[in-house]
Length: 156
Image (cartoon, rainbow, N blue to C red; front, side, top):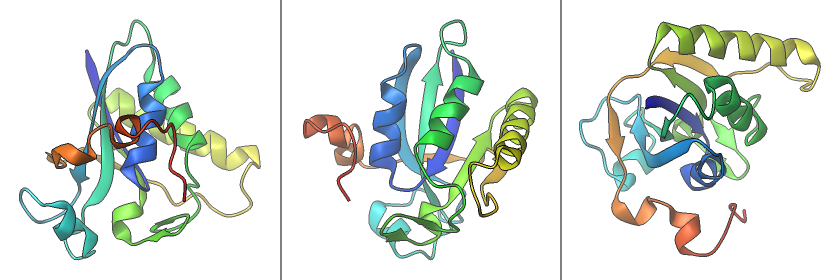
């Protein structure tokens, strides 16, 4: 199994998108990239901890590639809006990939560059590509939030 971590706005919809991929064995929503140890949702929502809402994906590379995960990441948010996705505003909603291996770093950078050159977006892509720091699992009620409610995506 391999691990990948993505931040693309509200983690509920991002998690649901990854869970639909064959080869994804588990997903966990949580917080990454901040200064506070073991933050809560309330802490992160203040915007003062520096964390992003993120999804950690465990996957079987023989069934789904990291490039496939990147495709889902790019397709499920707007990577040109700084610290914002839809009505959600704040650094906790930033666009970022957190790599776990040098191969993931190279793939994320190549994917971002290709998307920037594709002309799909009129504005520059602001997605951060960083090494994965400690990931803090969100509270249980956030895990598979949309599935628990019979939804497949956020209704914002």
